[in-house]
Image 1 (spheres, rainbow, N blue to C red):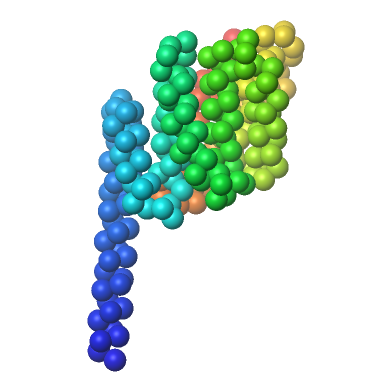
Image 2 (cartoon, rainbow, N blue to C red):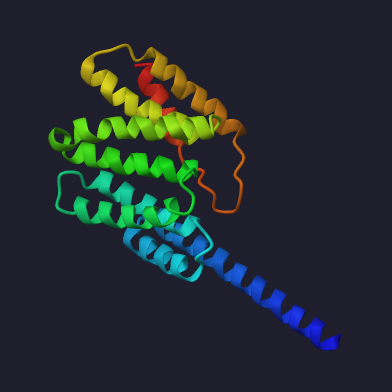
Length: 207
């Protein structure tokens, strides 16, 4: 009996230690990103992902960091490698959970970055895929503010290009702001980004 209790105590001690390491690592990686060190942040998230195979968020952030960097380097030879790293990390998690709305949003953003980098070659091919992904994500989780906002921002680009009415899109951006106010994260380090972008987008609507 005493031996069983000892084994149980060791198990839970290791579990708590592992969880603490995970939380400390994730906090550090996010701090690196906030400090403007995306490469270091991405590398750190990759190491966490390798150590914590049951956690989807490290690979999510590897993908998000590199996708964000791709948007910031459009028209350069960096985009291809950034997108490749983003897609590789994302695929690992989408293969496990293909209906995770946060993962789907990043997939749509990856395609959007490819369109923005080379609209002539990628626009016609990938734009329908982006809308299909957003429609799927919205059907799964209609109250996710990042789904509503990201879809609206993609539609806004098309509307401005073709000169169509943007008011319905602005209404959806406003809706996303309301959803941001009520959205509750499911776990520690769950995605929370988007509210500032929604505020800026709504201000642009008023111009």
